Length: 636
Ligand code: DHB
Image 1: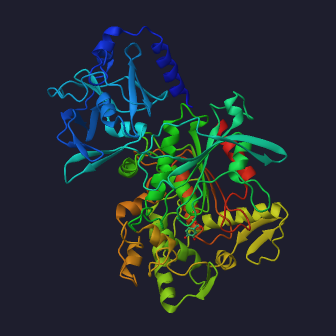
Image 2 (image 1 turned 90 degrees about the horizontal axis):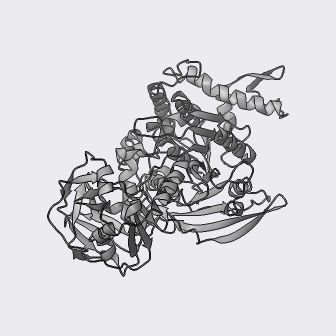
């Protein structure tokens, strides 16, 4: 719960004990009447209302109801909507406390009419001011957009939809707003849990498990757009764990996405060796855990259309973040301290979540699935081997592996064909222009660049991370004497042969590594559409496609790459970053995480970046260090 929201609750509560003014109660007719006090204190906004020209359908039935359009959205009186939905699964009751300027609604309760509902008077759009009334649903202070028009509170329909669990869509053929009841309310139900325990290092950890909570009001796939929320039992008894309590505990937000596939939410457990997983470890340290599921590239609806192609996976994770912010006031843990974690494709999504907070590009997708109308920026992103920057990953891969022709692709060994070698040469030659276009700098201001051969300060910089990794291994007693590509003088790693390093790491993927010319890669599948399973996402591969493949929408390609958003206007990029890429991980080029980390640093973000020695493609292998990092940044 954040302090600002807590204050708002206290202020609202203090208003509620003021005497209830009967005069205002009598005025509460078809809507929730605003008190003169509220009307005066409401700021006269620049927003203009017009009587909505749209038709309205509720569960397929056309209804007549007073509505105004403000900034492209429909606004309705609460009592009208309550009346229309009474008897459906989305029904809700309405009460109010005029003295406290508070409107009170409860989900699942039948609506009691007060008279005057659904009456349509004259057009009152001339008098429109933003409303400062408090709106409470099941006790939660809901952040809904509302205006006072002709003395009544009018609510943004979409915000009512997320609170009461109905979908709002636009039917252009009928120019109609379409309301469908029986969806999901996003108001957290704190009694919907099971107490569970796990053993951890001789201790029993008890926590409340809220599992498979749907985090959008209008899910495309309710098997995946769900979250498991785990809260240490101590926080319900007012206790602390270490330095954390119910107010301050960070929310650990691990996604389980791999291969850009659909992912179910994770749960506390141990691995084969009996080591606790990240979720169990987080609980033991007093974190609240919110483990989101997300749609992925292979998901299909009943009619066979694809329902999880890009940008579904990142849209879902953002929606889950919004759910946590929406309910911050009533859920233990601080939604101002959400720390995302993921590996590989999941690491890429963690980076994308961290980079793109609140950016408007994702808003239409979030609206469509009924995500809460809340910010979606996060505090920190932990990214293990992020398979990211996909539209530049092919050139980066050949910059590193050009000249190495043998590959071992998930067990399939092969040698590049003549054509593939030509492709490798072409892609390698394209990388310097991209890298130079980024204008990256070292901490000391040195420009990071490459010449036409791919040599230059950037290459030396990438080398420096491998050198640092080898040095750390050496300092920890690892025997590096058998590696002829490492130069060691008196216990100091002074140089590496970069070309030999690449041979040592080995090539995994043929060229192009990501945007396969035959549309066969994970990423081709990620960039498909509802109707097309696989598409290209680079101009090069589309032009050289062996399958006459189409290319994904440019906006969607943009939305899947964190590089386009870091520190940009209209975006709230996470302040803290931890990026790990194994020193022998060849699922993507070493250049990719180096570029990501450097861009973040150059834009002023706090980055902890390393290449763990001997580590291949994987994540969560250094949990003590991961949680030490989170403890450190939350103290800052
Ligand atoms: C993953 C690995 C890859 O090599 C890739 O291209 C995409 C995703 C993964 O492990 O998630």
